[in-house]
Length: 162
Image 1: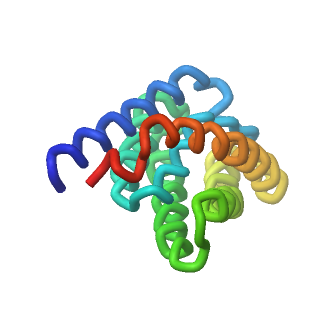
Image 2: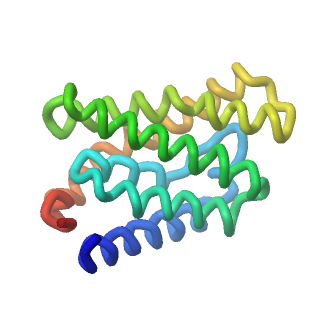
Image 3: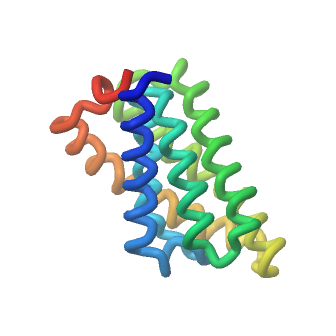
């Protein structure tokens, strides 16, 4: 990995942590609105963003989660699995918006992993928790589409990383 890719991924991780810290009370419950999840859309511009996103999730969970051990396994795992699924799905979804919608659906569906975590750790009802966490993820990712597209027009995520 070259220095530029490493630096950009470090910045992405730092931004994920900062945004998570800002809205901490809404990011770690059975109704999750973790605004930083919109950074998951970066994966559609370049698969090398995976490193910064996963590192950001890992560090945010390490420093801010009330259930650190669970979140380091399930939260990071859910992000990694979803990002890898999206990398695979990009072979079939063509176009930026179509890929972002696909990414939103993948992350929304895989919230069953977080629901399982909350069921194990806190005894929350699995199906209801899957529903509430999936709704939160869906809303954040959906709202993230125009936000990330607007930022992409200024920054050009495709050319930002090698």
